[in-house]
Image 1 (cartoon, rainbow, N blue to C red):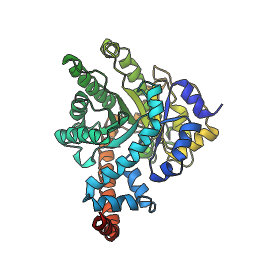
Image 2: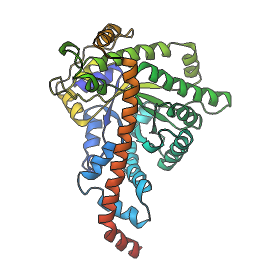
Image 3: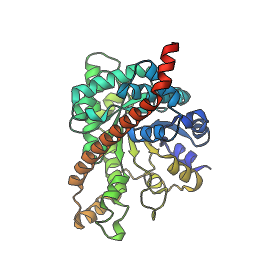
Length: 368
């Protein structure tokens, strides 16, 4: 049996961490859905920057948007939504077959708003309304300023993918924000179900410590943090508070493994997919990792709900001088900064393309 089918049958959703106009136009995404059991998709500024920089696929659309008077962020979001709404429509059969549990795509608010709670909420509400797709998540980082934005956005009915989570504690804060938003809706008699996923980043842990630990600890910290967080996730799903929400008709927020492409060339290219197989979770992975797992991935069985030996492993890192609590905060801050850099690079790319395509856009505007 195809390894991706085995993963699907175990109860884990397999999502693609990529979007380009090319994979929409040439049928690649449709084939991933048909052949590789892919049931969702995530995106981020870096993915879009690479996609736009990779050729001329976006040039006609950029010229059209310029002719309409769009520029900068407004032009980018229009461009991104063209891709993501097409992808969302491809996933609509999955969305309907699973009663809205699966079949989602994700779009991130501007990373420049990461420290501005009210502006983040406003952007989330506006982007979701602009998309006009039930199966589109808006990504908000689980930073200190992002947590209240998550609660308020959920309260306002916006499905949220909480991004940039790096620890059990950060995950629990995000889950609590989602629950508070839902509870406020229930208290006011609103439709209770507002879907959400919480994205825990894995491989960045191992990249951060690779030169600071002995060989026997390399490529083990990210998995241990994942196991610890999965234990907390399972415990939270067993609480009366969580069960009350589910009884009200709410889809449970799911834990999503992000950053699961192997960065160490000496390690298995399916390391994080195999280690983090678990029911009621999601793994979003880049094309390269998806292809590798479909080709030669092997499942060891589901993650233990008790976290296995994660605390013993983490203790080994502490003995080696790694403070996991301090590092979790550092990784989240660095991740937010990296997204800002990618965002600025992306807007720079849009500006370059816009300047080059301005004559073509002017011609279209004149004809219109």
